[in-house]
Length: 484
Image (cartoon, rainbow, N blue to C red):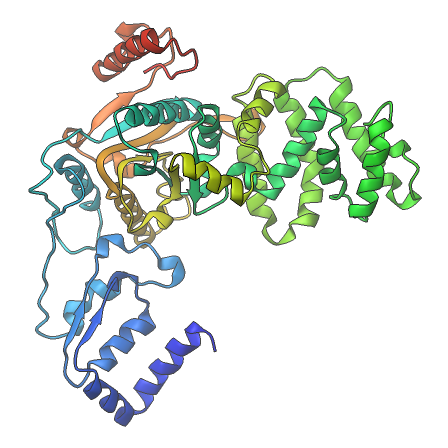
């Protein structure tokens, strides 16, 4: 039996045998359930049956933090609790000891948009005022990433440890661009709720092709991509890499003396490199040709979750739009070696506890001094899959609420105005409808601007950012800081 069987069979026992139900209910005189908003229908029914004799039941939970419907949780369990149990007393725990009053004002305004909820308003008596939460409008994802990395470094200079800061996101892939920027700034980080971009096998495969354009004698990369070909295992791949070490033209792998059954696959690989090395093209053009070649191989090698991996690759290609040259990209990736082991990761953490990158679902129940919530766009938060359902939109709103309430003192909510898509596609991003509904007095608006934008064309907050940027540039002479 698994855990689900234990639940369903116990519920059947209680429902079908009144004598057993009465005996157990009499023995368990007081029932208390924590995190009641995360219960499913079977669990809620079991609670009702277990306290049938005495009616002594206490449930602790927060309807505003019900975000696990995909695991079967039903937020209506906690909303219907007063109806299910006569003479129920509701005790609202509205005093908050975590966040500043200004952060709470914003979160109260967010959850007020929910259609179904218990009416409540969080407040604090110990952390009054503080900085306003900031909604950051970035020209594109690169600017968003640079702003976050720079602000993290500034907060660290002010005495806030990296592990007291977190970057939260709706989906694991939303942080790919930021991860590269953090590596560029030598900011150590750990990621929860998904792999780092360079730890995914399909991204390692893709980067191996790019690395061979830089160094055709890179036997580790050859070994990796050769084993993707049908019928070629570790022994054959090793034989080919031995030939490559002394070959005058390593890209002509089809000329290696091997069994004819490998010839067609090797010929196609040789044609790919011939195209990539003989034509004048930019990085993204080369990457797109590799993408088209690699897709069928990826489907064969990673059939079970091929669509997800394809989406990751498309996001990785969008990140490449920020790079002028292959050398620049590989230099950034080399700052955090792709084959970083778990032992090495632990060694980094001994030097300095790392920044946290996390999906919102993985962050529930945690807190940090400073929180950055990225890519708060319609289609991401709320998810494009939720916009047709009022119930699902409410859950997306609760997910936003959970993210915002992780912050203790500093909160930054950001989104890119222009987003990068696959095949050099760019499109305008719409800020989340949840942000559009917020009153302006509960947040500070920050507009990141590209250098050389005339001050007269900026809003007042943007002009302040431009002044701050100028002062920062004079102090650090950093050429790649965000203009803010």
